[in-house]
Length: 337
Image (cartoon, rainbow, N blue to C red):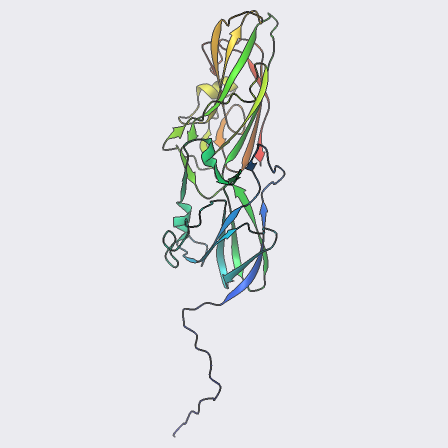
């Protein structure tokens, strides 16, 4: 039997076997806990000035990058993206790098750059300003988010952006004691800050890791009064674990794991309070974490609020060098930004 095949006169378009279909997808990006918009002049805590969008062909660490785009001044309420259709894909959003080449074809080549490579990306810190990128007169906080799932054409999807640094809000008062003594505060410094962190924010991270090295920020004097004041710091995560045997704040200072983060408060001890010169200089160390006794973990996108009252002398307190005094730390709270 002889079979003759007669082709159609309608020419069909040629499609390369490796070519994928692409569709418009509408994303809405939410900033986690956006109630604080600006807390210090020029620092934008919840705004996005520029954005990388990275699409990977799966969710495992071996999944490869198949599309990347950089956007300036993106509309987070209606972000129109052209993405490859596919099932169980990963779309990463990296905000406020202020760097249009960090994920370009050289630094993140298509079809070979992996999720594992993205997770290994670091940010280095030499001072507090390293927590921000600057555009004009404003400083922006790095953020990241992730969507995993199907990418169908015409879909409306959402993802949440989480800030890379933690925020430390410290306030204090120093009051005259019953015997007419007073500690007058002169400066506050954040010490034991990791000199590097991952680029991706993960507020749920609980893996204890000793930083390769730590840095100390410059001392803060603005907003620091002799008997009351406040200071705000931003820092990368520092997961140093817990010490279950601690029962007091003094124990927390005495048993802190190496390279834990702490506030160093300096001042002078006056007796009587109106004396012309102080009796001694004092250095007070408040170790950070989710409570004031056992926890030393500082997590990304988490706000830590410490309120201290200096009101007496306690010679056995390990938190103080040279001269010790009793301090109440209430409330000591942490939580989402």
